[in-house]
Image 1 (cartoon, rainbow, N blue to C red):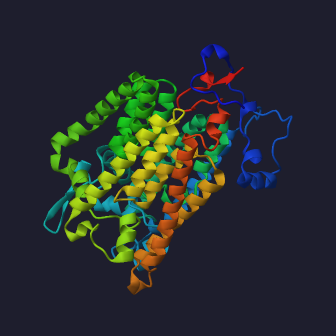
Image 2 (tube, rainbow, N blue to C red):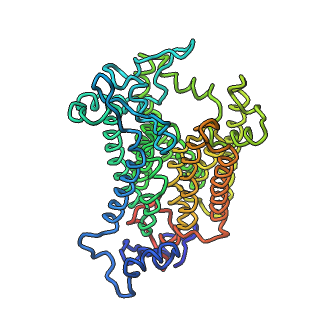
Image 3 (spheres, helix red, strand yellow):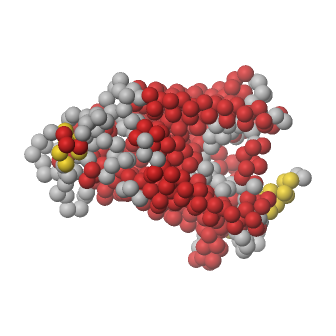
Length: 492
C-alpha cells in the first residue's frame, strides 16, 4: 500500500470511503495475536465477509474485554475496601496487618474518603486539617476535587443501603470505581474510532495489565477520557470543543495540556495556526471558568496543589529516587531542604526534551503524527518529572498504542510496569516487616524506564522514516488523528 507524501496534489489522488475490508487483521500482522486467534478458531480467511457480524462487532468485543479487565481492577483493590465491626457495632475500614501493602490493594480513593472530609457535609475545598504547624487542604486540581466531592455526597446519601456489611470508605470506593469504569468504557469507544483501520490495536488499551493495578489507584481515568475526547473532536474538525475538553482535562490533572504541544508542531509544519489557536483559546477559557470561582473563594485551598508539588520530594519510582537509593546522595532530595534544586533539574530536563521534540518535528521528512508527538512529550515528562506515581503510567497507554502499535513490545512494557506496583508495596513494608530491599525496586524501575526509552527511540526512528509507520500505512499515508475516515485517500 503506497504511502502518500506531503507533496502529492489533490488531483493525483482518488477519494475512497473506508471499508471493513481495509481493516488490519492482527492475526496476520502480530505474532502475539496470532497464537490467541488460532486458539479461538483461526484468522479470517481470504474470502471472509468482514464487517458483517450481527452482534460480535470489534467494538462490542473490545468493550467486553474492557469490562473484564475493569472487574480484575476492582478485585485487585477489594481487600482494601472491606471492613470489620467495631465494639460499638459500626463497620469500620480494616487495614490490619498492613494488608494495603501485603495484598497490593492500596489506593488513594479509600483512605481519602475520610482523610479529605468527603465523608462529611460541606464543600470539598472548605475542608482543612492540621499537620504539624501547617494547615492542609484538598491537594487535587479543582475538577478532580469537585468530582471527589460529588462522589462523596452520593456515597454519604446512599450508604444506608450497605451499612450492614461495608464501611463507608468501601462504599465510596465501589461507587467511584463504577463511575470511573463507565468513563473508561467511553474512552475505549473513542479510542476504537481513532484507531481507524487498526481498530484491533485497541486491545492494547482494553486488556492492558496496567488497568488491573491502576484503574482505581487514583482518579486518572477522567483526565484520560477528556484527552481522548479532545483528540476525537479535533480529528472531526471541532476545534473549539476539543479545546474545551483539553481545558477540562487540565482542570482534572495537568498532563492533558501537553497535547497542545503536539498540535503546535503540526500547525507550524502546515502553516495553519487557526485550529491550534481555537483549541488554545477554549482550553484556557474552560480552565479559567472551572478554576476562578474556587481560586477567589478559597485561595489557600486552590493553591495547595501548587504548594505541595513545589515542596514535595521525589516519588519512590522516579530516576531521582533510584539514584538516591543506589548512591546515598541526597542532592535530589527535597526533604533535605533544597526543593529548588530538584525542581530546577526536572524543569530544565523536560524543557530541553520539549525543545528537542519541536526541532525533530520541524526537521523530520514528514509531518509527525499527533500520537507520535504526544507520546514523546508524555514519555519524557514521566521520565524527568520528580513525581511518577505508578498510576501515571496509564497516561502513556493510549498515546503508545496510537503511536507505536507493536503488540509484543507494548504488552511487555505494560507487564513490567504493572510489576512496579506490587514490588513498591512490598518495599514500603519496611525492613522490619520483611519488606523487599531497595535494590529490587531499583531493578524493576530501571527495566520499566528502559522499555520506555526503547519506545522513544523507535518512535523517533519512525518519525525520521527509518522504520515503517504501520499506522500511516493502514490509512493511505494519513494521520488518523488529523483526518476523518471520509478524508482518507489513496494514490491512483
